[in-house]
Image 1: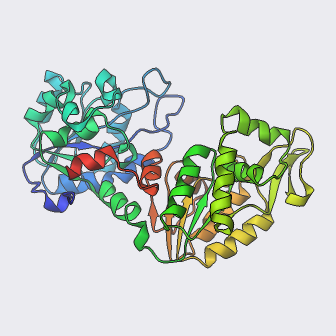
Image 2 (image 1 turned 90 degrees about the horizontal axis):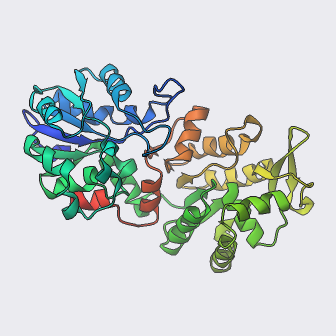
Image 3 (image 1 turned 45 degrees about the vertical axis):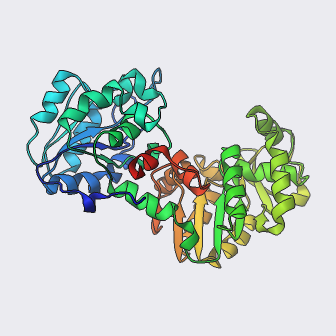
Length: 399
């Protein structure tokens, strides 16, 4: 069943509950340290307001008990600066005062309702039907005409504000959600050959991506980097030294070595491993070919080496589609940023390039790399789509 988008919505004079994902890192003063997620939703919000909609913004910030669990006033202030329309802030989500704030909106005005996670049921998972019966949804439905979900980054959750409203009132995908579904949900139709560059430190998730895209024939080859590559190297019998092996063990990834070995047995040279690695030696970057491993005691693998970057770059340049999922090393440390920077830069030369969200998107922002065809706003949600899994918030709109 197709999902309705803003093209299907008669906006003028309607009151819309619009779920966005503006969960952002905060600075020491409690302000926004990074406004990238807010900027991502400007197109959807601007369109709705320019078309005469009355917009009640629903969003969350942080997790209960966490240091970044706070109100949405800074986000409302920032959106007020970004949008050519007035944006107010309500310090409650579905109280009588919050509902009055929604009812008092005029065409082309918006109000940011309080952090949905201040309400306990919002941090629980429900079926769409049950979520539609929660207090948050039940109290807000009478003052809304329709619901727009633009929060792709949270679409892998089945919380009330994400799946409950479409069970009660008409639901539509915002422009961010629409674009993510169109791109990540249709990777099979992108130019061939398709190369996935899989790295980062979330090994189980990354191995799930490797297995899925190779099994479904979505990827022609996978280039491994980061801790993911370390696990594959260990599976291939390479001695990375105690420091790198201990990191894998301490993070609970030791069993993933057997999983990686099975993938190497099944898919052979479709899974490429690094030819060299970089470690920290005497405060500097020191590169070692695999034949020169293990490194000295206490030295851990922090990045792929320059020979690997050159070999991988040749594969990427020969690709029709490149998907980046995870950094190549500890890119936050300038000493070990080369692998991530250089591979991500060359990926922009492919006919079609996709960034898989999360740490990958953070890296390209850090380096200021531009020219990708699609940069996902999601981490876990993007991962689910890349592995062919359904997203509860997307299915709620479809149903």
